[in-house]
Each structure stands twice: as structure tokens, then as C-alpha cells.
Image (cartoon, rainbow, N blue to C red; front, side, top):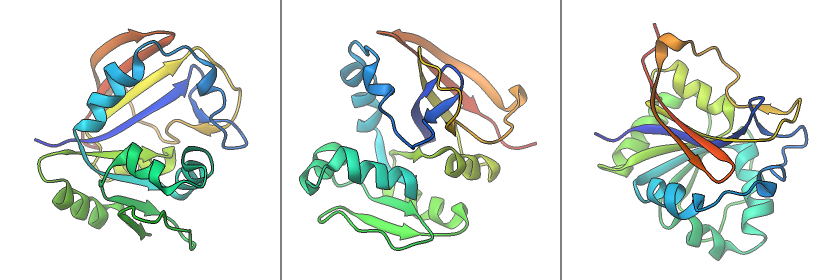
Length: 187
């Protein structure tokens, strides 16, 4: 059965970006075979994606670098729902759907589009929290980096107690520790 997953990197002190929304800290950490052994198999099972506007804008500025072909190379033809309250530029040729509001109807659309493949809630933490609040988040996959930032964008600005989280896998990849948790329904 397909899962709704949050796959991300985080610091030891629980931040996914610094105070300037930068991920520069992440690219300084030796990842070993992380991309081929962990991320590529994960992405191969993803049929649809969702992300918040800050994550989308970061991707436009740093991942795409004014080259729309990079989006397709990275994410293929997977549809992506971008949650935003303002107009944002679209990546030419990408299957982007700009939405706002409740995550439930969007999750339903994503599930239909993904077929038997998983859904990836790319980020940020607030959007992932909304999926968790609605009982629509099945799994957290967290790559913990040996970095502390002291402040920034929190991993999940929510209380998710241990009664909802069950460890299902722990692995070391280079300097990262990759943790996988099953997420239970809200109580």
C-alpha cells in the first residue's frame, strides 16, 4: 500500500534550514553513497510530491539555477503540488499544481495521481505538520547530519509524541544517521 512520507535531512538540533532558509550546512557533510543507496531508491518509489512555497522557491533558486531541464532530470514527470498563498513562477515543462488551504483534498488528488506509488511531502516542516495533524502522514525518513545551527526552520513545528512514532530502521551513511519512523494516527 502506498505511503505518505516525509524524507528530509535535519541537523542534530532539529533544523532543516538555517535562519536564511539556506541548506548550505547540508552540502558540507560527507554523505558517502547516500544519493545512490538511499535517495535514488526512495525517489524511484515516489509517484507524486507536495511542497511548501519556501521549499519550492529554494529549489528554483539553488537546485534549478535557471535551467528548467534540471527539474525534469531530478524529479521526472512526477506531479508536484505547491502550497502557496501567492503567485509563483512555474518551471516550464514541470507538472506543477499551485494550491492553498486544507491538505486533505490535495492528498486525495496526489493519491489518485500516484497510483500504487508513494507520496513525498518534500517540506517544509509546517506543511508536513499539517499532513500529520490530518492523520495523512505514514512515515518520517530523517537523515541526521552532525551539524547544529542553534536556530532556523524546525524539522516539525508540532508535538508528535512517542505514542505516534515507531522506529522501523536505523542506518549510518557516511556522516549521516538515517532514521525511519512509522507515524500513527492522531489520538
